[in-house]
Image (cartoon, rainbow, N blue to C red; front, side, top):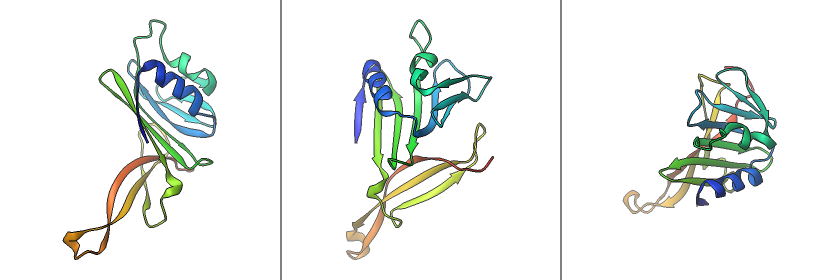
Length: 155
């Protein structure tokens, strides 16, 4: 599901949907580095800064309100859901993926090293479709690559 939200809609979505069981990252327009969210607490990757998730929205936005989320990605193991937020011109595109709809065959986990945190897990999502160019056989077609959490180990 993809939604197009303005800043007020994004704040409402964020406060309602991003619960402490999500982990992820947020990039803010006027901050260096990322905010990493794990266990309901956010830690900024550049400098000593941490904030509890419930007050996160107000903590990362400055008083004048002219900064904004550039990109954010979250994953909940409990809900098996991935959320991607991207700022596009004057709105935010919010994509939600129910990973429970994908089988072992159509979800491939890939791990990447990150400059800022633990290894980042990405889920490559695929859909099985009949392809007329492959003699009518079913083939896997890419659907999306989404944030799938952090690896439990260190860098």
